Each structure stands twice: as C-alpha cells, then as structure tokens.
Image 1: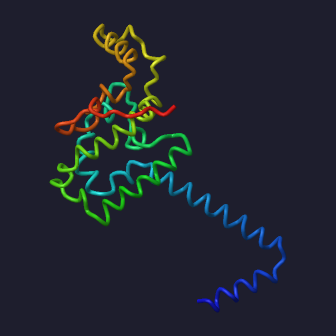
Image 2: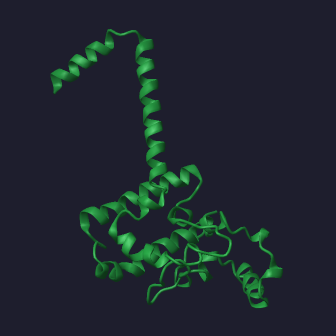
Image 3: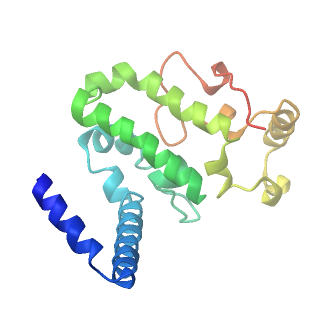
Length: 197
C-alpha cells in the first residue's frame, strides 16, 4: 500500500499544476453533486419509511392524520416536520441522524414494536426538545402565525393562541400528538429548554 501511495505521489508531482487543479475541481463537483443527491434522497417519504421501525410504528399512525389527508390536499411528509429547510441546520440535523441510524442498525434499540414502545417517550422527548429549541421552526414553514385568520378560529382557539403568545409557548407545546400517538407520561410542557438567543 505504501509503495502504491508513493507511486501516485510521484506521478502527481510530475504533473502540470493545472492538471492537479482540474482533478481537484472535478473531484469537488462529484462530491458536491453526490452529496446533494444523497441529501435529496434522504428527504423522501420512501427513504423515511424504508425501515420497518418507522413504517410499522410512527408512519402507520401518521396515515389518515390531518397532516396526511385533509380538506386542502396539502400533505406534510416526514422531513417537512422533522428536518429544517435552512441548509446549515439541515446538514446539522442529518449528521445528528447518523447517531439515530447507529441505534437502529448496530444497537437494535427500537427494532421491535415492544422496544419501540419502551423507548417512545424518550424518542418524543428528543423531537419535542429540538422543536422547542427552534420555536417550532418546522411547523412555521407551513403555518405562519401572521397569515392565520382569527375569524376562522373559534373563540377558544383565539384565546388560547393569545395566551400562548403571552406565555412564550411554541406550537409543539399545545399541538402535539397530531400526526403520531402521544407517549404516556410526558408532554412537551414537561420539557424546559433554554431558548437560543
């Protein structure tokens, strides 16, 4: 192996610097295109439901929910709620997800329905904590407060939204268990986070 690397190094040293720059540019373009393609594929519903843990648990619950089927025909899929759209935040979330894949493939932490149920509260806590830290950023991509029509809300909903704003609540504090079953023994209100400044 050392001999091969030495040969490659010698070959590169004898080349015109423009050839080396060209190789670097092509390699960079291939890496960026490959990374972008991989990112787009991992943002599909097919990818998110490709493992049985997601397909048989949370995706099964999502079916028929208001985010799956509704009067407007606007459908939210997994990444719409669970992955930021901002490029840097999206990459950070994808890197975090690698740890979740490790738990899936190597540890087998949630590879059965029973194990999934056992860890459900912890999984929900992780998602809710992320959402609280970002002021429910993913919700706000589709649900914009200043575009909501209070006239179409009940008086109770109007009062609760006003109270939530006054108390500094975020969407997930009240609107949880909409697309997935609620875990027993915990709600987002139980989670206290320090908001990013």
